Image (cartoon, rainbow, N blue to C red; front, side, top):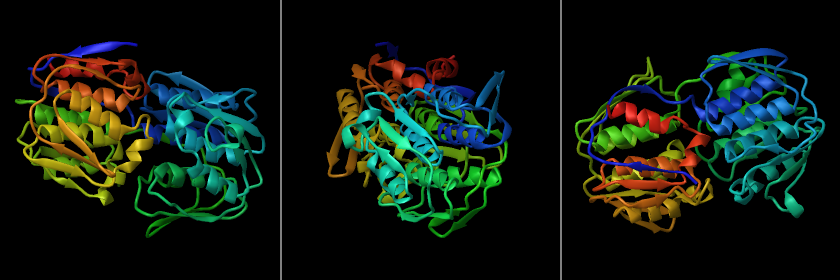
Length: 416
């Protein structure tokens, strides 16, 4: 286990780019693997999660060539891997790949690390079985590793029981291999990466009010530049907002629907923050923050940013309530528990009330904290350390490699 020490006291200034959007990267790689021909992708996320997805499509017979920033993927002739397919720590890959593999006429085993083996997969197994897939978890459960006997799918209309872009994406990927159209009706709007990218690759997609329908078919090869990941940009947005004298510009941040809810929350708290929708540049300057209420309807657009927004709340005047964030319990860790325990160890006043997370502003102190193997908890603690009294040691820092290997380097670049 590795650890870093983060000392407070220096303002953050400068420009930087964050890794390519992780959610988009997974989906582009999968569509390229299914396409008959060669796709070119620039700006893929350089974390371990997407590297695992690239390894999986290679095992399934796709060609992958990396040259500088360009990744060339030659797909169209997928075949049994002959080994278990390992997603590492990525719940996104686990759920999306389940849908893709369910449509391929061979047997696959999909597995991940210990965190993945604890995460709920019934939410994708149920609709896939409804489409005709044969899929089961270990010892007949809904837990990974999953055995998927693919092929023979038919389209369905599926009403999601929870707001989940991963569940929607899983069903839509399976729908590409079905014998009839597939419709997903959402309980609340979620990020639209799957349907946007499918449409861009030539799939017939119909987006209605609260629903999306895909026609069966194979994507065409695509050329795609992946924009910067808003979830990673959020760490610098909060850091710049709470560290006195800071001014940070994060370049080329994805600005599509249901991904930048954190910008609205920070602005409502009084942050000096602007997002240029033309360039994607996100500019943030230090400012005094005030507590707010984050409604449950906002959560699908910022669920991954709650840990670092809790840091902003700990630095704000008054109380901030994050309503209806129970989904955090089934992320890489129980993020309700780990956000509470680690920020609490730093002196933050954080409580859990049912499915709400409540944070009261105050002062933070440096101490030893633990990532619990969760990249977002590690980086949120590093941001909190910037305004703590005394240095903070963040253990389990290797978790950050799953999504943002250069985070520590980028932090140092903004402090010099």
